Structures are given as structure tokens and as C-alpha cells.
Image (spheres, rainbow, N blue to C red):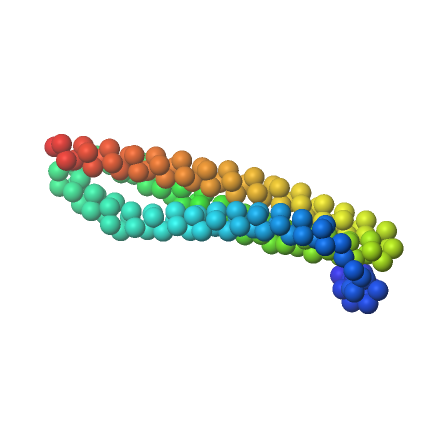
Amino acid sequence: MTEQNNPQLDPETAYAKLDEDNVNAEMMLLDKYQSFSAEIIRLSLLGIAVFGFLYKEVLAELIKVMEKKKPELSLDYVKYYAICSIVLFGLATILALIYRYLSTDSMRFYLDGLRYHKSNCPEKSREKLNKRKRKLTFCVTSKIGFAVSFGGAVVTLSIVLIMLLDKLWGIMNL
């Protein structure tokens, strides 16, 4: 962005009075979505940590017991589901972080467009809103992506836990 196109460097636009109702409505919406994406990030990182615990504490011990009692049983397919879940949790985290960046950046374009609008510069205002629209398109895509990735990760985590419980139940009944 050149200095000529930056409304924050032009006193006419930088200090223009903004309509608080418009700004507050946009900020409240942004805050809700930012909180949601932060929660997805927190839960995704927690999901990855669960696999660290499962591998260290449960899976390693289960493999030792299975080798002694029933060596023909294998946990390879459980590992593949676990890897899939970890990858999906990681993808959800990455997409949620991308969403957070893009949504914050789109808010900047909204405020810039509003500044130009208040300073009677409709062409520049329209230009900023078009840039915002492009950012929001990527926001929607990343939002859908992190929701689907997180949902898939939770489903595969559930499958892994059910498989592990099934194996434990089978070993206990030997």
C-alpha cells in the first residue's frame, strides 16, 4: 500500500468522524467470530495433546501387553486413524489462524473504506470495500475448512478411542 492510498496517513481521512453504530456492529461480529476461532484453536491443540498422552501412557503399554498375550493382534490401523486425526487437528488450527488474520485484515479494509466514505472519496472507498470482499471470501473458505477439519478430527479421535477400548476389553477377557 502506497502512502497515497493509505487513508490512515491522510489527515482528511485518518481523523474523519466514523459512524460508531457501523463500527460497533462490525467489531462485535468480528469479536464473536474471533472468539469462536480461538476456541477451535484451543480445542485442536488439546486434541493433539491427547494423542501425545494416549501414545505415551496407553498405546505403548497396550502394545507391550498385546505382544505378551496375543502377538497376532495388531494396532497398526489404530495408528493410521490417530495420524489422520492429528493431521486434521493441525489443519483446523492452521485454517483457524488464517481465518483470524484475514478477518482482522478485512476489518482494517472496512475501516479504511469508511474513512474514505466519510471524506467523500467514493472511488477509494469502493476500492477498499472490494479488497475487503476478497478477504472475506477467503475468510468464509477458511471458516468452513477449519470447521470441517475439526469435525473430522473429532470423529477420527472417537474412532481411535473406541478401537483402543475394544482392544483393551479383548485383552482383559483373555
